[in-house]
Amino acid sequence: MKPSFKEAALNLWNSTGFRFILVGIVNTLVGTSVMFLLFNLTSAGYWVSSVMNYIVGSIVSYFLNKYFTFQDSSRSFLQVFRFALTIAVAYLVAYGLAKQLVLWVLAGFNEQVQGNIAMLIGMYVFVVLNYLMQRYFVFSATEEGKTDEC
View 1 (spheres, rainbow, N blue to C red):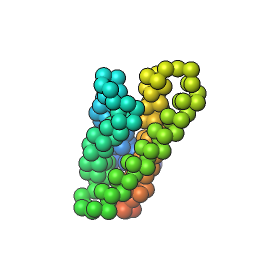
View 2 (view 1 turned 120 degrees about the vertical axis):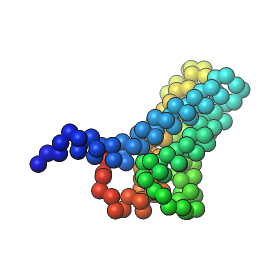
View 3 (view 1 turned 60 degrees about the vertical axis):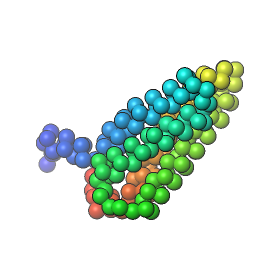
């Protein structure tokens, strides 16, 4: 039997993937604003601007994902450590790859254009890596008893 519209909407709302996307929208608005303002309006370079994005965004992300996305009320230093490790690894991989790709593909463009495009690409790669690592590494114990696959 097909679920009703109300049940389907409730299932979507309760899925971790959908909630992660909502949190991601908030993180993107906050972090991207910090990153592009620093990069374009101050003397902060590519790495300082992009890392500030993830320092600010990660604090927001941790609390929203912990309590809203994955509905986890446990207190664990290991979980905080795993979260920080996830952010660091996803950041370094995403932005390192994006920077190298853009330097290679857009070699003839100025540094400002290269930096902005690399940051956009890095953001998308980061989102995918971050979700997978949070879901299966940081908050995996929270998810073991749930069946709301995204």
